[in-house]
Length: 198
Image (tube, rainbow, N blue to C red; front, side, top):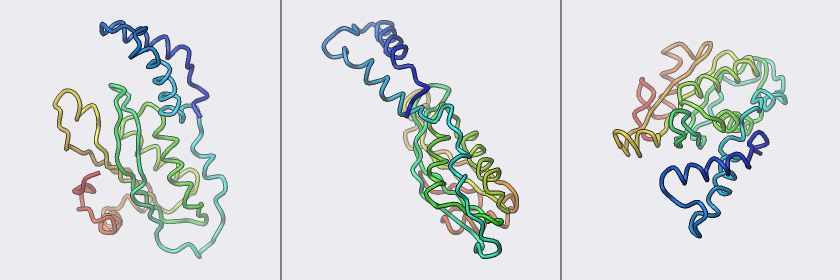
């Protein structure tokens, strides 16, 4: 985890940041902070340089016996916004209509985790998840609904602590609004994909 992260450089940068805001990085209260931040960043950005498609490599052929829809809902989501390096958190709901292959259900949250563990924006994250599944499984359709609250909205600027953002990314048959409506009904959301909180 975090093999791409240079901890020593992060420690030095955090020490400089603490000095820049007028704090003493050598004080008893802050002396361990740069190392803690480096450890946190190694976790937050562990997906940098990782290939999420590798997580779908054990997909198995099932032919026509796939069922109509696979839906994994309420996948916990945590990422860091690339604009302010503040966290955003919420849920991912992912549906796909299998073609000739399916993948173990735990692979889908792992794809989310790898793609979220890098500097991100929610809109791109949903598109990357959808494309990874489309490329890796060749399904008939993919639908990704992300719902999240953002630190850059809640903790700075407009400070809207209750605001959430819903985004939708789709491929294939699940780009059809009628097909999407069926998935939204299973999720308990309106046709726009996001009336519920994250």
